[in-house]
Image 1 (cartoon, rainbow, N blue to C red):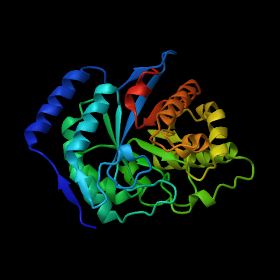
Image 2 (tube, rainbow, N blue to C red):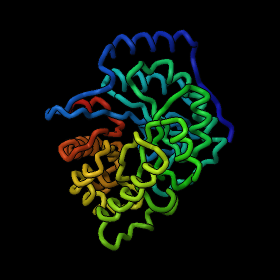
Image 3 (cartoon, rainbow, N blue to C red):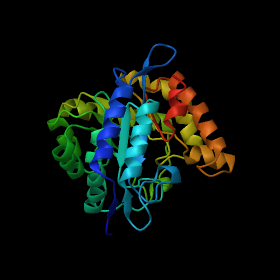
Image 4 (cartoon, rainbow, N blue to C red):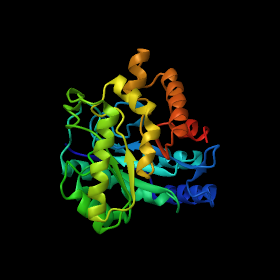
Length: 301
């Protein structure tokens, strides 16, 4: 697929960068919840034409990347309180088909430097990919980033080595299968919570062996889980504090919310329900909320 770019002059990027740095000052992307615990908001930026929530797409169906829109969205998220900007160029929604590595990189490369220009010190850029090569190229392009890997290193055996060699912050998520078939792999003999706990016990040992010290735990809401299993995980989220790692919760506008309501991800009631569940997640120990709607999530803190 050909990738086309839509962009304006570099001066607008410089102005955006100056404004954002002024707004952020010394906040460093951190906010305290009412218990005093630091919680961060991760804003979602998808460079895809088919992400499940239409409001997060920054690419047209014919392959045009809307760079100005990306920059504006990133700037808006930071102004509203995002401590991370999570950039993904390969859709991983249930049922989606993966793009190849070259197309993923073409999409990502188009936005990395424009995003870096407007992201102030203290706000982190995370790259949502399971491919080691994408991370290696990103490091060459813009320097250090956080790695957000839906496979916890299972889909690319070289990924964890790359993370360890560069001492990168790493988000390890639980799933089974691949996006195109994972919703057929929701059988957990002893319950989903026990299975995910066992998964991270094994990952913690692997991370320790490889020297990966700075990792974040993501239970993988919506990935190889039924609606009921997602809510079971949320009910038992506090148990994952036993690992002593930051916990990332990614439930924003997902099917576990909109399907029981009989609505689409875009419906206002879905955002309201998302916000209610974010409140529960924070109370249960979440350190990072991965969201489409930064202002609403930040208002909880």
